[in-house]
Length: 144
Image (cartoon, rainbow, N blue to C red; front, side, top):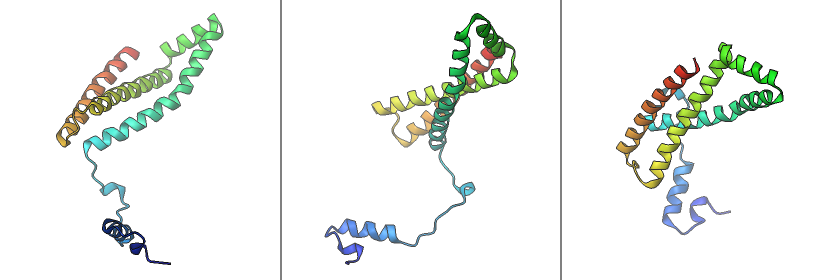
């Protein structure tokens, strides 16, 4: 069997194979990795998507219970109006939805070609966070 660098006659392929096979140190200490702000907003976008997916179970349960009868509708309504934990869960879901929508709109704007530069990405990340915080506070005021 031939060594990997002689498999393809392309010069770039040999260099790529050497780079992959190199004995470079790997940083596995996550506390020392410094990510830029757009990376954090992207990670938060994914996390809020997971929260919304899991939160659907709560919302489907509440919707199903509210449709059973008038008494169960009133019970769900009372739980959401009186229960602190239910309000907290509802506020958390609304917060995740607000952030996810704002970050999604930012991605749609970037898909059109606006804000694709390094500075545009930083500005988009900052705007995403500011608008989301405003919407999250408004959702908290509305729920509580």
